[in-house]
Image: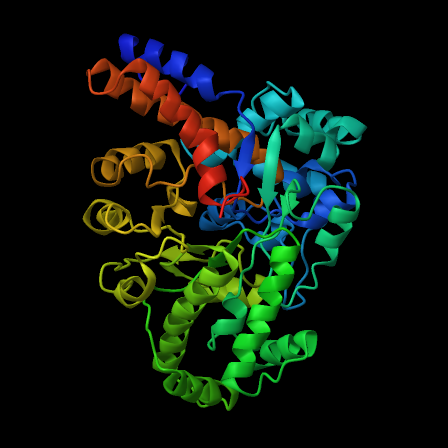
Length: 469
């Protein structure tokens, strides 16, 4: 696999540039790997539970062809029976491997097979058992346990994502083992969505849990804010350098304390409607920006996903199993209240993501090029393909440049795919920079410096992983 330009001159330049980034450590400042994986450091159970069951990129594609997630081992929340035989799950994937032709999932998976496990044979119904057995044999070896792979992958920092009501006991174990805490290799991220989204089932109960955990009176809006601030302090002490906000839209509101308190009381009383819930989420983004001014957490905003669009899938299997769909998202007016209040404050840092590519040229790149607080996050989720990564550079560089972007973010639950995803991004950036060099728009030495910045130095700086304020 090269992913370099087909044109010979650019291809050679890309290879030279890629060499400057290829061996740099991996910075993974946002993702959803289960920290217990590294805290417990146990062998992966089998190939199916490593490559299929937790990966909604994979299960979603198969579901689109009529293969129920239950047959792929995806846990149910409604008590329905699911497949538990790893080999049966694997055979089902292998017999449908043709569905993944041309997709990033196939690219990442085959790269992991070859470069991590030494499996070069192509997956198919005929080779399914042979590959399953070969992978199983590797997974039984100490060299393929999570911590050994973490070191082999050359990961410098891996950020996981936890709710404010998570007790962070897993991260405490990692810290005790020398793997976590401030400056550690595995850190947490503060993700408060389930405490600010009144439409998320069980919201009031989680707020009560927050009060119990912090000893604050969350029956009042000021008490709720105090409780969130208290948990942020705990997260910072555990090594967190960023927060993450996955709202349906990018709307922000700067309400008075009195108006915010009215919304909060309506929510606790079960009287809030959809408009109230959106207003509260929007206001809380501004509140979290204020908190970031004090504690330094970098804000990440991931709007634009219609969660649980496939309602039947959600009813059977819960959240985050492939039932979400991107939607159009407006940023210019939506972010204005937050930016009017804090967009020029050098203490604030916001990394913006989108699932709506039409917003890159029209809205996001000009915004990032106009406010010191804003950086553009990498193509996310449905866009993190080689094509999506190329389009990102082509559409944002003219307005935002390279240094208003935040480097690559893998945003994955699939631990073994992390090096593959970063390598794809580095190859794509090498190709883009090679074109600029070939066209006489960028000197080769500056392109070499730029690719190292994109791959390593920028994410480390933007996410405050270098210890900077």
